[in-house]
Length: 343
Image 1 (cartoon, rainbow, N blue to C red):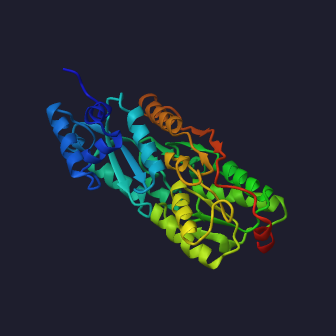
Image 2: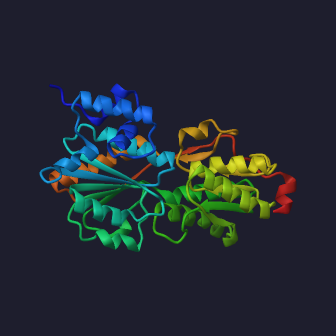
Image 3: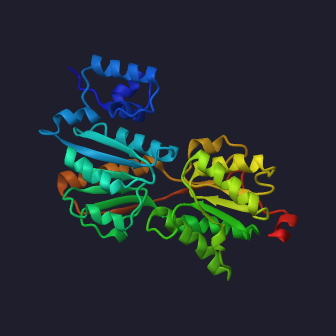
C-alpha cells in the first residue's frame, strides 16, 4: 500500500499543506466543510501525521514547527513551504501556531514535554533574552527568517536574508528621492531580531547623510491588516507632513494604504509606501506595492536541509544568508514640491 505524505493529502483534498496541518492540529480557523473533507480523506487513506503523532509520542520521535504570528501571510506561506520540503522525510511534524506576542520558547519547552522532539524549526522568532529558556535543549534547532549567530547557541542554525543591508537599501532609496519625514512601522526596535536589524540598517542611511531619524516617527504595531490600518490612521492623523512610510511587513503596508486612502491621501503622490516580505497580495494592491521580497522556497528548503543534516549527521550549526530581491513597483515616488517644503 502506498504511504501518503501530508502533501499527498493536500493534493487529494485540493487544499494547501498548511490547511491539512491546521486540521491535524485541530486549529479552529478552518472552514467546517473543508475540515470535513480533509478528515474524510485522512480516514479513507488511513493517514497518520502531524498532531496524530500524539498517540505515538511514547514510541516515535517528531519534529516541532513553531510559527510565531497567525495573521501574517508571509509566515503562513513559509510554513507551508517548509512542510512541503519536509514531506519526503520519515518524521512526523507537530506544528504550533502562536500569537506574535506569545513566548515561542516556552511553547517549545511545553512541546518537548508532550512529545519526543528530535528537532525544532522556529518561524518568525524573536531572539532576545528569552532564548535562554531553550539553551538546555539537547536537540538541533533552526531559526527561519532570523540570523541566530549572535545567540551563540551550540545547537542552533539559521536561515535569513541580510535584514540590515535591506533596511539600509530602503533608507538610501527614500532619502535619495528627497524624502525627509519618513515613518517606520515595526516591532520592538531594540530587540535582536530581523526586524530590529532592518531598522538599524535604515537608520544608518540617515547617519551617513548627517541626518537623524526622529524616534517619534517609529510606531510599534502588530503584523496584520487591522493593525496596519489602525496604526496609519492614528499616525497620519497627527503627522500630515510625513511623505513616506516603511513598514516591516507587507501585510501592514496593505492595511496602511487603505487607511491613507480613507484619510484622503494618495499613494504615492502624497505618501510613498514600502513593505517587506514580498507576499503575493502586494502585486494586486492599488498601487502595486514596492517591497523587499524574501525567497520563501529557498529559505524553506535550506531550513529543512540544515535541520536534517544536524539530526542525521550531527553537523555543526551554520548560519546561512540568502539573497532578497528588490521589487520596485508603483507605491513610491519622489515627494511633491509642496510636500518637500512642508516636511
